Image 1 (cartoon, rainbow, N blue to C red):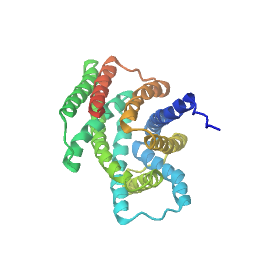
Image 2: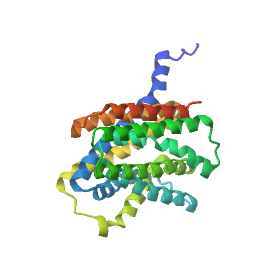
Image 3: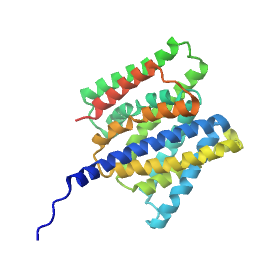
Image 4: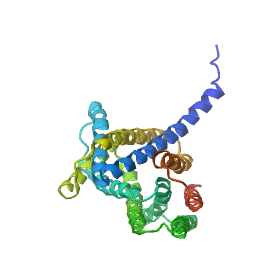
Length: 295
């Protein structure tokens, strides 16, 4: 008796699952940004960032312990420590920027991180920079200027905006270097272990500054922070699941749906309007990223 041929509909559904998971993960992380902006405005970016890291670690750590994989080797732990330190200040500077800038604007400008990562990969990994990567970087830079120029043209460029942009660029630089560390990490450890040490070490590093920056969290901020911690873990795991089942080059464009989510959540949470320069600048940045990542 012959085996029935697999259903074309079933195969198509299976192929679409990684894309659906990636889109869900990006949506989770964009919603997390909205909750974190709300919490940071209430109780301060430092306190909100520390508590989010600790909540995330408390959620994911039991899964890592349950798997009983043992403590990472010294070399792997050094990678966890390096990324934990980087991500701690990356997150703090990004969430601080959210208190100064509209959500969609901040997400759009943060898209320059993959373009910066191309140059870090050249310096740190010895990868060749192709001409298309240079073109992509130019488009990304022009897109950022368009967004900033739109603010200047509308007379909304004040000291708070400048501080937010400086913090966001600093975060994007750390995020770009973070890509290099993630690449090394992913070859030595699984996603549950990476997520556990990422949140745990990041929170522990930031706690060192509690005597200088810490404040007693406002009760109204606790629910948004808890939601942000849970969404961080859910988003990271969904994206890790997707990238394990589909090529990165196919999934990368889904990352840019974060701008659409940010526009929606920025309006729903804070009644932030999306300006035409922001849309135009985002289109240039995304075009640059697409040119850089396509074969």
